Length: 219
Image 1: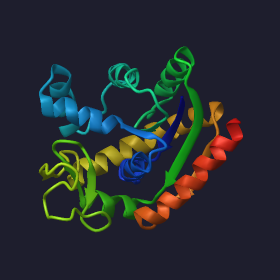
Image 2 (image 1 turned 60 degrees about the vertical axis):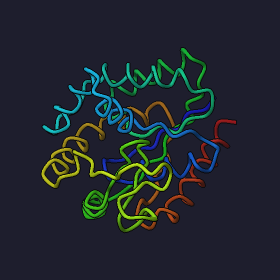
Image 3 (image 1 turned 30 degrees about the vertical axis):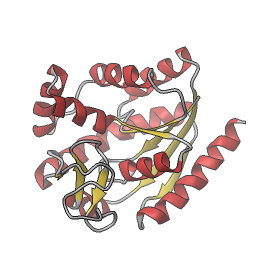
Image 4 (image 1 turned 90 degrees about the vertical axis):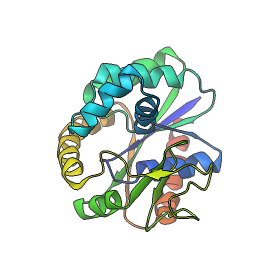
């Protein structure tokens, strides 16, 4: 199986593009954030810790995040597009070990380049289904019926980390950590940078071109 990582700061559009890839059928989208929210929604001990950390704008530890993610990846038997991991140099190392030990071909990464204004605008309009975790945006990807998920009729909720104050803190923290992660990832794997500006469909076309380039490079 193949694995591609979507890279970029929170609010850069990774979740939206991952969901589009999932619906295209070629890759299964795995979002670390969605896995966290599922743990929070079901009230597990891990979920309660994550909720407290998220509300404080603090990142969950590398080891805890990796253990949760890798357990989930073990249940998937198709190619994966990964969103929200790795975010530190240590997580890059952990992901490499997991892929090598499990026969997964890590093709590389697609970096969604965005600026602060774009990220702020996207975060302000983000909503997510409380059942399936499907993301929506009031401007770029609204539901057919306000407040209701198109897929399963679940209720759309504002993410708990999408207040301006928390988003600003997470943006600063993520920038610092992800510069290190991106440098470490680029030292091991090819990364194709694309302009993350534009509508979801416009960015999706760029993502598909980047994936084709990564797949050609690995063949």
